[in-house]
Image (cartoon, rainbow, N blue to C red; front, side, top):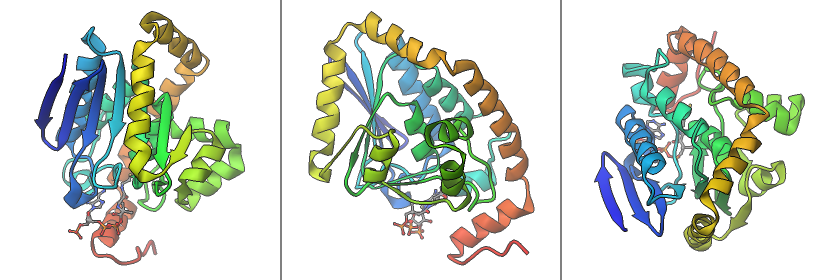
Length: 258
Ligand code: COA
């Protein structure tokens, strides 16, 4: 059963029981628009309900994973509630029961990094670069990263990454524990597909329950963290600090926070 659909800069391919979600918007470094979040959520829903799909694989294109949320969309149509495309996407990936693999090449910014914390296996190329520039944008962390990072790194290392929007290389990500393997860019997709295919051959119910058990320990705390983050994120999206940060990005200048 092979399947191929292309809509709104998100390409969905099903092959060998792996549903591949490819982010493909090269002119904006694969920045995610509202329609793209909706397309990814729909793809996850399809993967969830289809017996033909055992595993999901996320990847970018043109040497970029994603530059995160589209900054123009943040201004024009900010996600101010829980029933918004970005929140629905996050809820879906956080509660997704089948295994999720990610192949990260080039930049993975903002949600491009935080969504990886909810993938089960993450493969990266040597030139992968990750960062969570929430403070740079005068926002707060999302996707439960405010809970996950200090648990993974301790408070000080987490604070350093978030306060300074510090860049993380693939090798550092591997050392920190959220990247499984780092390979040459040319080998990345083959490796991720090989691992995804291997997962698709394993006992699906056992995998689903194993994933559920791994998640059990922090599932409720994650929900709490995400709603606390969401409330503050929404407040800051409407702040003058945020307008200044985004104007500065598009005007290619340093922001002035007074
Ligand atoms: N939203 C909208 N447009 C974006 C974007 C985003 N998140 N990221 C990049 N773009 C656009 C740029 O405005 C630029 O457009 P232009 O060609 O019209 O000037 C184009 O994509 C190329 O980006 P550029 O910054 O020139 O590429 P780069 O290789 O120098 O840097 C990044 C790549 C990803 C590091 C950089 O684009 C960046 O920091 N983007 C913003 C990331 C961000 O803050 N995301 C939100 C996190 S919550």
